[in-house]
Every structure is written in C-alpha cells, then in structure tokens.
Length: 309
View: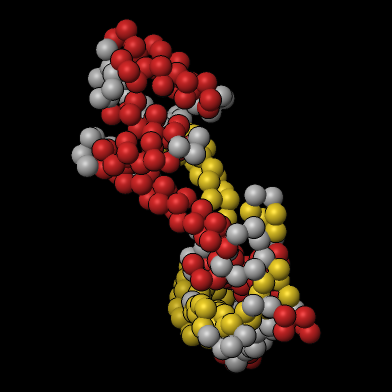
C-alpha cells in the first residue's frame, strides 16, 4: 500500500477530529474494423517497448506491451512486440516518462461527532459537525514517444488523469491510492493500444421503431421484423428488405435496411442511405453516426491493406 504523506501525519499527530434509449429498444450488433488513431503507427509490424521512467513507468510499459501483444486482426497477431536486447530489431521503439503525484489539501467536511457522554463514558448524543479533513489528489501523466530506428518521430502522446480521495482522521480509514493508480494506468494502456493498432470490434446500434407512417397492411410485418432483431438479426434484416420496396421513403425502414447493409459489410449501399438521412430525411443524427462508422471501417481497412498481412 502506497502511504499518504505529510499532512495526514500532521493531522493525526495533533488529534484532529446515442439520445436516451427506451428500455425496450431493439439493438442490432454490427461488427467491423476500426482504425488506429495513428496511421503511421498502424503501418508498423514490430515495436520495442522500453521501460518508461518514473515510479510507475515500468508498470505502464508492461501493461502497454501486454495490450499490444493481444491485438488480433482477422485472427492473426497484428504486432511483434519486442523487449530487452531484441528491441534493437524493431521498426520503432516506444519510450517515455510517467509522472505520478500525490497532493494533499486540508478541507472541511461534516462528520458525526459525540457531543454528550453518558455516565459510563459512552456517547449519549452525537451530531454532524464540521471537522478538518484531507482531500488527496492522485495524478498520473504519461508522456510517450514512438521513434523509428533513425530517430524519426512516428507518434507522440501525453495525457493526464487524476482522482480525489477524501479522508478525515479519527473518522475514516486512510485511503489506499494504489488501486486508483492501477486503474488509471490500465486506462492509459487501453488508450495507447487503440492509438497504435486497429481493432475488430462490435458496436450496438439501436434500430428505429415507429410504424405510424407505414401503410397499415405492412405494420404487422414490420413489428414481426422488429421482434427478430436481437434473436435473429438475419431474419429481421430479411423482413426489413422485403418491406422496403413497398415503402421506400419510410425513414425508419430506410435506416434499418442501411444498418443491415452495414452489418453485412455493404458499406457503399449503407453510406448512400445514411447520406440521405443525414441530409434531412428525419433521422439526421442516426444518418451522421452511420456515416461516421462507415468512414472508420474504410480507414481501418485502408490501414490493413496498406500494411499488408
């Protein structure tokens, strides 16, 4: 357990006391490749991860190495992650510094204080009163660089995260900052993984309901298709497709068919409909979100093709 310094000891010594989704909304899962944030880093086949400097630097470097080794694209490892003496053979090396700080400030909080004792010395009455306490601010900031063997900068990244813990001596247990630091390091490692490598993942997208504008003879079929979305997405998509020629301008049906096209990897078809919706066909936000996903798929696929297998 990492100890809290300074002010704690002083206090103890002196004896101080998508829009909200409806509950029944139907969700369709769509899978695809999502791009690395850095196109240049995505072109690498091997990376050496050095021990980052700073008290928590070596631990973050291990977490990052593990995250990058876990990356699989189409079932195959994406990166060769090297360390130690083997690092000299890597195309680029990741290094940097991790700064961790723990700052303490005296604050006033309310705590239940004994204000009257009974004949046996026990507390007969208590009341909430202001007492001097501490707010501990735990901050972690990595500053990292990914460099090619010739010193050329591929990628640089810096991000800070912090959390506050409050503690009143004689009232509360002293907080343990280590779990908070571990949590922040884990979040950093996850972020770095997505900065440097593409991913194949699923997204949950809400299909659009609403049958009011459909011709009455189609409404039951539409409702049945909606009921299939989470149990059998293929059957649901077949149902939406069968209805579309009979109501080609129905906004919800247009969107749901575009979502099915996206699910099947028919990105041009999906993007064409999403563009119509984004231009004002009644589901502007959904259309824009769909276009953003298509753009991510295309960029990720370009990264994968550019780098090759």
